[in-house]
Image (cartoon, rainbow, N blue to C red; front, side, top):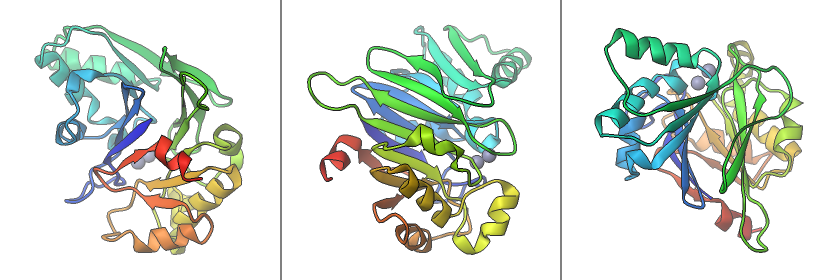
Length: 266
Ligand SMILES: [Zn+2]
Ligand SMILES: [Zn+2]
């Protein structure tokens, strides 16, 4: 399982951080997780074949996670796609995309299979194939938002690798049962700890809060993402997190993490 970060910034894109998007490669099967504006540029920059991505997971409908989707789906059409694409997203996403395509005269040439999420508790299977399973669970944010738990289906005796993505959310221990013991836990970390009141008001996490959640969850490794544009350097976020959870990395656009390699370090 290899994670590639395409965008690691919070709401405002900057010269060095695009907004949220990641590609997760599970034994050769590639899925996109979140799709901010500019994600298709990131896909090309990191040399993924556009048409090799067939499944897209959207955490919530805030623009910094979703506004790249119509452009990406449209470009797949322009490049001659015939294979179906699957989109897992909160309810409402399909209406936005279909309305956009209808009003802008885009006739998409390939089938889009929609799985819209509309639940407020529990863990729900939202996708599976021969390579992996994806389950979703609710986060606490200003609009309906879902975390994702991806598990591979290993061949042979190797244990299962599991990756969890939680972005965006306020501090909540309700997520702990879903992300317990994962190999890599990716949490949003919009702010440093001195902005805790603002983080609570805007329903985001600080670095220290994210690290406390990772420690309680018993994760192997923590990845902080959704970094506010106010931080030019990630040093303070990293040190505040490592005070609670040493095995922390702050995401950067273009960062690649091999979950198997990080699991073997233990
Ligand atoms: Zn966001
Ligand atoms: Zn948000």
